[in-house]
Length: 88
Image 1 (cartoon, helix red, strand yellow):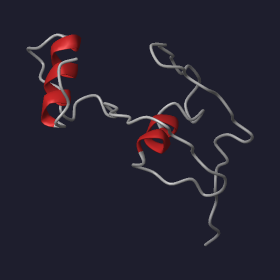
Image 2: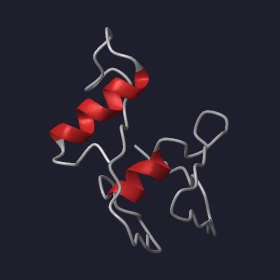
Image 3: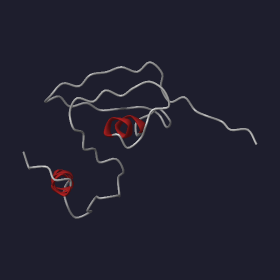
Image 4: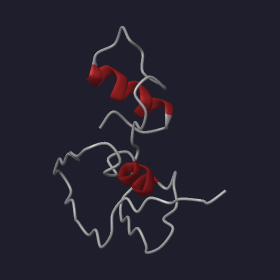
């Protein structure tokens, strides 16, 4: 049986400054879930490096850790508290 691998992205570089918001758009398999996983250290790159200068606390999977009766902001605050972060 032959193993196949998928190269999600190559030569990707970007910066997000403090206070900025960014989004990731793309088709299935484009790396939308892989990117925050790499940034959070949940996943490791097969090559290259990920340089994070600030703490990242992503909510990676819809459904895991989300309370359906809370708003999006309330879910973010709840997960932050569970991670030991302040409301600020």
